[in-house]
Image (cartoon, rainbow, N blue to C red; front, side):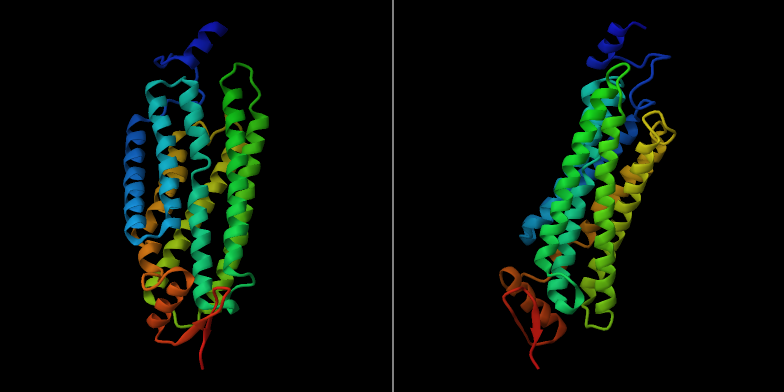
Length: 303
C-alpha cells in the first residue's frame, strides 16, 4: 500500500484493511466502548447529582474524571468504526491517560478533610498543604502526560514516525503520578495508625475504606500503563485490548464509582454550618465531644 493511501486511511473513516495494522495493533471493541461510555456516564451523572445536592463543590472533580473517561471511550468507539482515524486515536489516548488525575485530586482532599477533623497529631503536615502539594503534583502530571500523549499520537500516525520521545514523556508523567500517590499512601497509612485508638464515626470508616479501594485501583492502573508504554507501541500489552479493558477501563470504573456509594458529600460532616468550622462542629457532635476550632482548621478538645 502506498504512503498516500496510508495517509488517506488515517484522515478518513476507512474500514479495516487486511494486512494494514491500526495504531492500536487491533480494532477496538465496539461493545466494550458502548459498555464503558455507559458505565462512566452513570458515574458522572451520580457524582454531579450528589455533589450538587450536598453542595460539596470540590467533589465535582470525580465527575470531571468520569467525563474525561467518557470522552476517551467515545474516541475508542469512533476507532471501532474508523480504526485508522488519527483524530479518534488522539482523542482517546490524550484523555484516558489523564482521567485518573481528577480522581486522585478528590482523594487528596478527602484525606486533608479527615486530618482536619481528627487533629494535628494525625499528620506531619497541615490539611491545607495536602491540597497545595498533591493537587499541584496532579496538575504537573496531567500536563506532562497530555503533552506526551499528543507527541506519541502524532508520531504514530506518521509512517516511520518515532514514538519514543512522546512515550518517554508519558511514562515520566505516570511515574511522577505514582511517586505522588506513593507519598500520599505513606501519609494516609500514618494517619490510620495515629487514629486507630481515636473515636472514629462509622460513616467515616466507610469513606476510608472506599478511598483505600480507589487508591489501590489507581496505583495498579498506573503500574500497568507504565509497563505497557515501556514495552513500546508494538509491545504485547498495548496490542492486546483485553488487558486495557480490565487494567484501565474496569479499574477506573471502580476508582471513580466507589465514591458514588461512599460519597464524601454525604459522609463528611459539614451540613450544620459553613466551611471548616461547620464541618468540625458536626463531627464533634457525632463523637459526643465538646471542642473548639482554631484558625488553622484543627479541632482542640475542651477538657
